[in-house]
Amino acid sequence: MQDKAKEKIRMCIVCRGQSDKKTLLRVVKNKDGEIFVDKTGKANGRGAYVCKSNDCYQKLCKTKALNRAFKCEIPQEIYQKIGEEFE
Image (cartoon, rainbow, N blue to C red):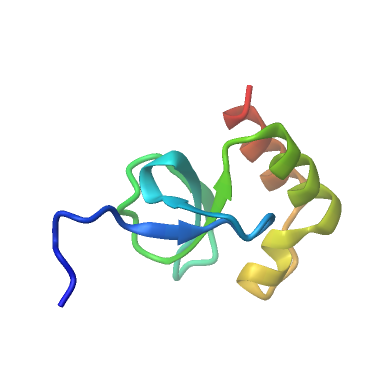
């Protein structure tokens, strides 16, 4: 049985690196289809995690990794909003 004190490990959808949930940026698609950056880490919906590095952000945009993660077309404005979190 896992110890509850252990950190929750998540995988970056871009580089596939594993890291503590708190060090990654969480992007959520809720049941209404809204896609946004979840700063609390607790929003309801399907979550995708991205490393907080410019390399991963560039690859995220280039490969449109969120389109694959959420199985739908993601508008360019969403990628731009995520980019603001990296500045």
